[in-house]
Amino acid sequence: MSDAFSGYHPLVNFLYFALVLAFSMIFMHPVCLAVSLLCSVTYSVYINRRKAVRFNLLFMLPILILTAGLNPLFNHAGVTILAYFRSGNPLTLESIIYGIAAAVMLVTVIGWFSCFNVVITSDKFVYLFGRLIPAMSLILAMALRLVPRFKAQAKIISNAQRCIGRDISSGSIFTRAGNGMKIISILVTWALENAIDTADSMKSRGYGMPGRTAFSIFRFDQRDTLITLFLLVCGGYMIIGASLGGLRFLYFPMVMGAMSGALTYSLFITYFAMCIAPVVINIWEGSKWKVT
Image (cartoon, rainbow, N blue to C red):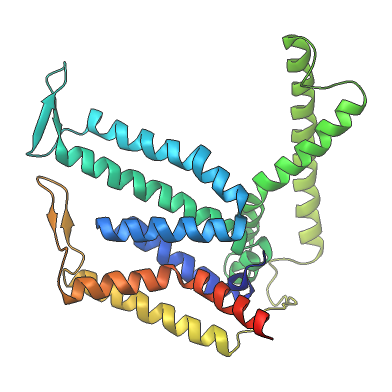
């Protein structure tokens, strides 16, 4: 399914992810963490479908459980002691709760980055930062698409090697290991040659030279203006509200913080509206398409 939010201007896409990623790492309030996690999972499933569901269940969920379980083993702060380890260190309720919060923050950031890699393509990244940091933007754009291209090329190489009898799924362990090493060697050689070709190609086109112009299909229209204003208002309100204590929350030495009040509730609603915006845009665009 096509993502309508990806069709917006790259500046809008980047502004959105910059805000949600920054707020996901800064706001450790449990409600904010839950909202960000819910929205990141919802958006990733919307744009990646079964792939996102499999990724969340097989990768994100184990990371969440592992991170939440490890924190109480090393963090013994807190006043509510539940038990003692054999080493004599206490197991505290605060360390368990903070471990869950930290784990949710980690998987949420990973989830948002998975959406970022789909929406912010290499051409958008180069468009945004090609004039400011041409060399760095090119490197980052290549790095963002490194894993997908490696996976696709590895599959091509593996299929080609299978046709000449070098299959990694049959034979003895040493035979499969040798065939696997050949595939890795070919893949690394291809990556190095491709990097050199890309560098020579961009250099021959005058990339990064002063005064160089570039063709772009991106245009900042009225809908981009509206969503930009929406994101700036929501982001500004979140920053102001947080600075006034509306999202104040402590895990140590005891769990306590703002859970009620007009300001706190308004911040929760604003944060949810900002995080869920791409999904709402997709639903809205889909409904208009069906009507027309």
